[in-house]
Length: 396
Ligand SMILES: Nc1ncnc2c1ncn2[C@@H]1O[C@H](COP(=O)(O)OP(=O)(O)OP(=O)(O)O)[C@@H](O)[C@H]1O
Image 1 (cartoon, protein in one colour):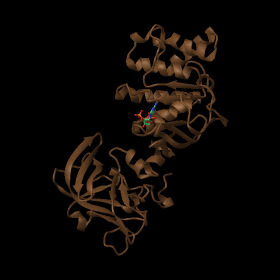
Image 2 (cartoon, rainbow, N blue to C red):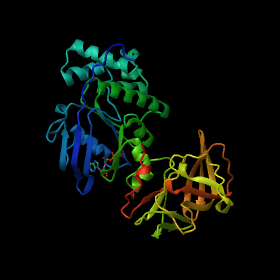
Image 3 (cartoon, rainbow, N blue to C red):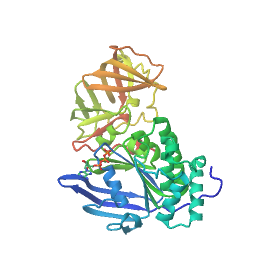
Image 4 (cartoon, rainbow, N blue to C red):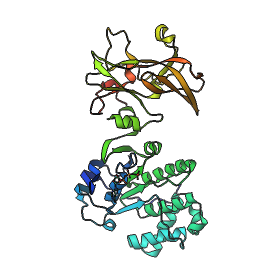
């Protein structure tokens, strides 16, 4: 906790309108539309090459779009150089001055970046180091710090200026998993205290879901969906988002639709017209023994679907397949992870990941039936977009 009130700032509202960036024939960005509220933390998540860094560099003013507009608080930033944008940036590979102490690294940024007096800069530097819990490093030079400590100082330097926009490009990618979790909690707490608008680039979905008020999922140079972590997970807009977010990923099976049912190799599921694929998350699948296919589900999975059960995307009336997804298969392997276990089942439809409680035991090659209620299914159309689902299933 800071010992004295924190010098806060007011974050800028960011609008990207149809931003494109071509590198020769490569369309790194293909019309990015994004509105980020003042003080909001948005995580940019996407696979390698999806355009995250290019977008961040354009926000910073280190690169210019080939089309579209970028506005901060309604003012176009096209042609505005980086130092006049009131933006600070934390890079993957931070560059602290090796011959300066932690304090002096921050003081330098504040004096020359912000034109602060020496006394005010020293006071701000001390306040920032205190907020990051590294006041004891104040006099140390980078060579006398661990990697995590150096990255804290680099983050401190970016936040000390109290810029209205902070851009973080994979700021923790060089650190070990435990340190990443600790540091991200601190960074988010600090950004909130400061009120700055932040854009946080990561290819780590857990990190994106943890830091972002909203997550913008990028694919092939465009934002496929921006939403709260709950919206992204529960109501993915596209098949890409559905399968990119979630670990193990959503199971998706392709089939042919007729009379309210999508049928594919070894499976059937109720689906709205135009569906070409059905998806179900591993935690929404239930595992039963092969006899359960006719005598009712043994259901050792420990639930997870209770909140969603009872609301269907359609009724498979007269089809004889019940109102959910069902497929038979054999256990390939079961992986224990914390309080849960992921069972991989090979079926005619493909290999499924099923998440069950850790106490559920299955043996390799055991025949099983995997089921899910209609309420847990997501269906996708030929363009990869999710098909509408009833309002009753919208997350609260
Ligand atoms: N200076 C450049 N010259 C040519 N192509 C570029 C340049 N910068 C980026 N690209 C291309 O633009 C696309 C987007 O790259 P970008 O670095 O923005 O992706 P990214 O999502 O940040 O990827 P990563 O997670 O690997 O950093 C890629 O196809 C990349 O090869």
